[in-house]
Length: 183
Image 1 (spheres, rainbow, N blue to C red):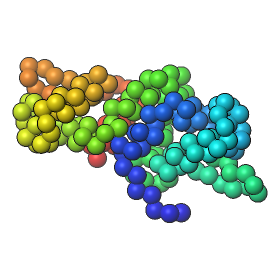
Image 2: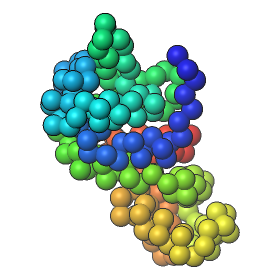
Image 3: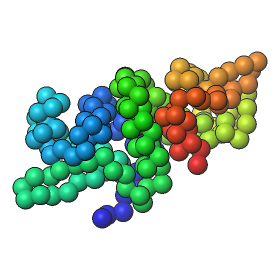
Image 4: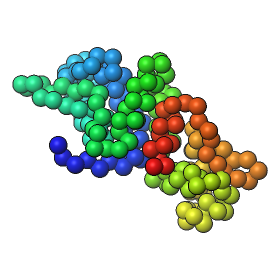
């Protein structure tokens, strides 16, 4: 197998797609599906299904195998990628609890940008003021405000008395995402 080195923000971008989340849900439910079966179940073309499945595979979240002319996928993490097994397990648990794909999607969009990951890592060291975050990250005022707002809206960051801090998260998927970000 080729050495994959996906960044977390790109993995989150792959997961921030309702079609790919639906594909993961279907793989969790069915065990294995070939590209044509996935296309039929999701209502997209086989070419598009293949493209979406390859994106999930490139992030180490699913594994393909070839059987004659068919490529069959299953939800199995690439163990070489540190965050993939925990993230896949958290996604499996979220689907098992019937968490709507839109909620999972929304959680994943928190870290679809490198700067939001940088902010979460800075806040993992402890609470900081806006000015301290600006000095630490060297972001413009508008970019910092934008990324803090995204993290706040998705429930990862809160501001209290001029200090920004990471929230204590109850949701296992968001906890797993934050752990992956901060490790």
